[in-house]
Length: 214
Image 1: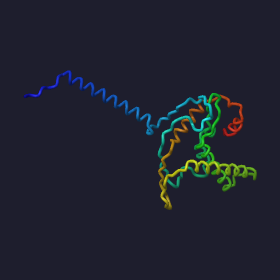
Image 2: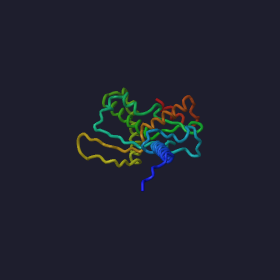
Image 3: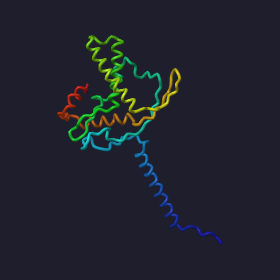
């Protein structure tokens, strides 16, 4: 008995259903990509002036994890290049302001990078005879001592378990980072632009923050 061919209406309906299904799948893939860890877009979460009952302990935003490949030795940041090292920290040392009054906060990563640069400068200044007075030398070394504590605390807190080959010479290390440092810097830029021109609140933190603006 001959097989009956599908009607024109049935073929049209099947084609339409296939198009709708493909379209929905595309939208679903786009949604999953935007909300997954593979997205490089910064998810800000809360406005910069949100109200809080208790001071926040972390930046109120979601950052994607990232992978960094590091080659040793790294010649991109020579110890004598002050200008190059100055770029590792955003303006105002990466301070941000949160809450209705714009209370200032430092970010641990940028505080630690500032400390690495401070220790580098103390070393370079002592090595190259840049300090003109004993007082200037003592001030720089005093800051370096503070920075050793900051870095020690940060390293112990993060307890990075990335493995590196225990061999001499050049080595490549792949690190899987908790947050994309470029996104953190993007957040700082956005936050500082939001509060630009707004005076600091008159509290005990203001003098400390204003002294760190350079």
